[in-house]
Amino acid sequence: MRLFVTGVGGQLGHDVMNELARRGYNGFGSDVQDEYSGIQDGSAVTSMPYIGLDITNKDAVLAAVKEVTPDVIVHCAAWTNVDGAEDPEQKPLVHRINVEGTQNIADAAKIVDAKMIYLSTDYVFNGQGERPWQPDDKNYAPLNYYGQTKLEGELAVENTVDKYFIVRIAWVFGLNGNNFVKTMVNVGRTHNTVRVVNDQIGTPTYCYDLARLLVDMAETEKYGYYHATNEGEYISWYDFTCEIYKQAGIDTKVIPVTTEEYGLSVAARPFNSRLDRSKLIRAGFEPLPPWQDAVSRYLKEAKL
Image (cartoon, rainbow, N blue to C red; front, side):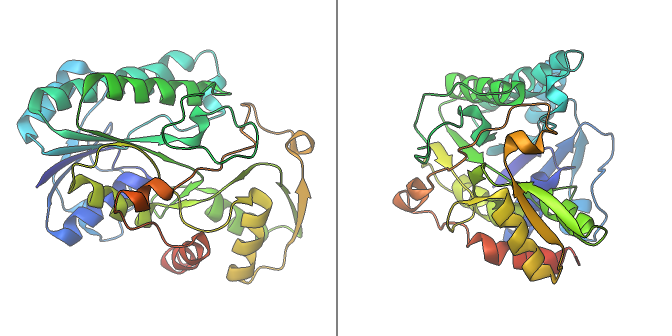
């Protein structure tokens, strides 16, 4: 099986490429930089074929995909700076990457008859209530521009290709890049106290675990919408931080605050990011391990 992976300079794309190598698949990585720009950790991603590609360039996307002729395209590339996406000067670029770029990938996937896996987000929903969001819920109403563009990306995929997996994730952390876990460990080691919101509820997603699931999906024809975060109870960012510090041996005092009290975000954040993951089990996929276990493995792997 040949797979074309976008965004391999980021957290998830890096782990997807390494998972492909572990299984002996032919993985072709791409990102906007001319050369691979992720961590040089000696893993397989640094030695696998790489294509510098701007996904907003429709002709370049089609040429690259035709050259690789993949069986599956895993589309990880995206604008993910949620607050930055609210900048009026950046919005056209955010749209080009998250919407037009995704449309370009979907068009190419259709032409070469490849399966497509698109990574989306809990931010496509309005974040209200307490009921966990179901994969096939359609009452979207995203609160911020990032969420709106990711929703438009979902619709571009659904309306273009038949063989698609749209996988919504949340609170992502992985080795290749910055994330909440790494940030909080660094803050905890330099501060006596830290304020963390306790009214936004969801579950984290460890890229290493997610990459395994995505390749599992690529091996099947069980298409559709899915939610994929690590297993375990729904928690707040405050709860998440407390567990990180407990496992990392950090005694910094964590102070719970409301989103309003925290007051530092430019973009509105959803209060309810509960994603129901049960469809994975019904479809026969192995769920991701509990998030506490994921934190433990990540802290060791990242040497934090």
